[in-house]
Image 1 (tube, one colour):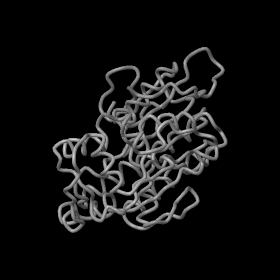
Image 2: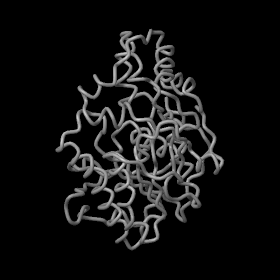
Image 3: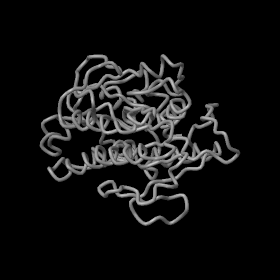
Length: 317
């Protein structure tokens, strides 16, 4: 059950009709949970889909086409737009073709949506665009926040382009927030769904040295943080959606194993990961990003699950 009881006030509209929010990537773990959270607050959600729509709550688009959305009239007067879509970075090896797909699904789609919103007679006051802590690259023990410079590597380059691609909306006066997500921990189809079967079999273990830092956030806190940011016009630009207590991979592994009442005694050597997964292993599983959510904490956001122990317990309730 998603934790969405927090009393977060959504932007008030001047009409008795429910506010309308545009959401892309609404079928994923985070997007599905966000739709439920918004619906519980009497918000109408209009989903961007690439297939033919099956209801009035869906709007077809093709980011590679011009225009990306054939009929933009349903977008007039939106209260907000939230862009979450993007190809999974940890799905498989990063072949040249898949790297192009990852880039296009983030950069090109964001640019197309931002340009579409910028051309509206009544663009939404705010656009939230998903990004990732991968922007910081692998930085060892360095403590990183929103003022830290971008790092190096393919994923960092994609994230930098991803955030820049929203500039047409900024130029049109839309408040743009780049949500730099850590690993989102919750039930469903996310990261835990891939790890849980291995750990339940007692085959889990640290990755490489285990000393690399992992920045994470519970699904409940990710949802609450999105609503929090929507409601605060003073927040713009990059925002780290991570818990205030990042952990090393070794600490995460031990905590996950303890939560599942299984041992975690089978480490995976870094060379084996690189051999099996190539570049993806080095930039995700073995990368070290110790990220702190300075903007959220400074604005008064309170985490329901500030520690990895509480986050994993909530995910497996």
